[in-house]
Image (cartoon, rainbow, N blue to C red; front, side):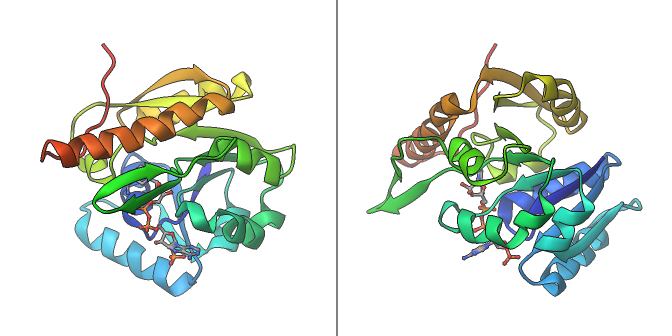
Length: 211
Ligand SMILES: NC(=O)c1ccc[n+]([C@@H]2O[C@H](COP(=O)([O-])OP(=O)(O)OC[C@H]3O[C@@H](n4cnc5c(N)ncnc54)[C@H](OP(=O)(O)O)[C@@H]3O)[C@@H](O)[C@H]2O)c1
């Protein structure tokens, strides 16, 4: 399966794309500017010692070429980003880690919505798209560590879970199914909690481990 990372030039998307490519997935990094994505791919290749199936494209072309689309862009940009690629999204699985967050006076706040971001995306795209919400509580830097991470996973379509679990396990992330998209609001709020916890206690951003 081909995986597009929309926002793949950013902090999170770049690490995720690298990890997926390192274990043999076909990955396409998307950007509003194809040249920027190509440059990021060259940089990743310079630092890796094996041949990767990784390329850089415009967001639209990345979505067109893929079976799974990861949306990893700032919350404020989701509608503009989806509008740009919407024609290429038919029948695709969309994974999102987007947290609606803002920072004021040194503290993070959850931008309260009635719906989770994943629900908002589900309402905006076609009904033939399956949305999966995951990876909210994983800081980008942790993707490059050898620790086995965990992620909460939310979807309204349980039939997709086997494929999604296989994908996460392939990059050493243990998936924990937590229910439908509405419930992913909890993961969004937990991310804000973990970030503030790190500020208040002067430590690195936390992730979660459920034993
Ligand atoms: N960073 C983390 O540790 C982390 C952890 C968990 C979840 N998340 C979530 O992951 C998402 C991405 O986080 P990030 O830290 O990787 O973000 P980021 O580096 O600030 O941005 C990611 C990419 O989004 C695109 N982008 C930026 N501004 C845009 C705009 N105005 N319109 C359209 N596209 C724009 C850019 O790609 P191009 O310029 O190439 O188009 C950028 O490289 C966020 O929603 C965040 O809540 C992040």
